[in-house]
Image: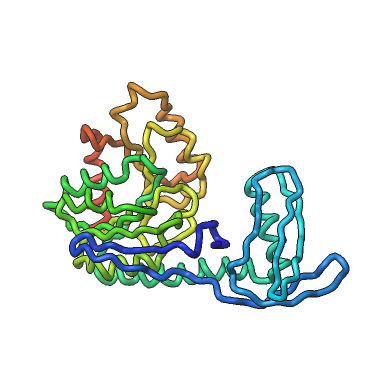
Amino acid sequence: MCVTCGCSDESETTITNSQTGEKTQIKTHVHQPHDHTHTLADRTVVEHSHPHSHHHEHPNSSSEQQTHTHTLADGTVVTHSHQNTSTVSEVETKDSEIHAKIHGNTIELEQAILGKNNLIAAQNRGWFKGRNILALNLVSSPGSGKTTLLTRTINDLKSKLTFSVIEGDQETVNDAEKIRSTGCNVVQINTGTGCHLEAAMIERGCSELNPPLNSIVMIENVGNLVCPALFDLGEQAKVAILSVTEGEDKPIKYPHMFRASQVMILTKIDLLPYVQFDVQRCLDYAHQVNPQMQIFQVSASTGEGLETWYNWLESQSQQL
């Protein structure tokens, strides 16, 4: 279990090159065996070693005391409990504190995972810069219209700009096939139970794509407004995509993502006459979280507003 976001370390992450059809497995972070101790209620100190495959039960109750167990290598069962707090963030904080005290290295392990990711992200950023490549990380909830907007953007601009795409989904190559229909080079990364792309996956994806100099790499992240905010991929900017079929309060519900994004694209504005969505309130919420955020309002179906998004893309690619 990944201590950073909770997605499974045992998931199989694969990359599929849509041009060749070749599918290979990607190795991501693996927890190594480690030694740690438990202090029992009678002050006895028990030392043991095991890989990070032990199971913890963490019910979702916000007010009850929770108990979970560890089975040691010699068969001894150690039980400890803690009181849940009233909010999810408080539960996560308290839980991490308890496990840090018991395991000794939980917080350090989380820092090591993000630290390793950030190191590879820095390498990716240098790789992009050295090749004059604009890399953008597209993030959103599932169903926001990322792929539709991306295919429309590529089709409209492919005579002016060269695109390569890294698609991220838990399963299927459906979106990669949609992108490939534009004539654009694309690889599909399937994360299994993973909920986000990581810098090492982007490194591998670029190795497969080999994007040309002076081009644009679009990274379509796994649909999720939580964990992708934590993971730097080496991109120049995160682009948060929000549709009018979602709530206008998404920016304040998921502030970390919108704070980490330099751009927000409000999509499906052609549906505004048919949905209850307060555009101005949404814009106010977005600027409340991130006053510097640049916002575009577009419809990939009708083309409304796309020109301003396209102008921004061209200007960013020219500034490299």
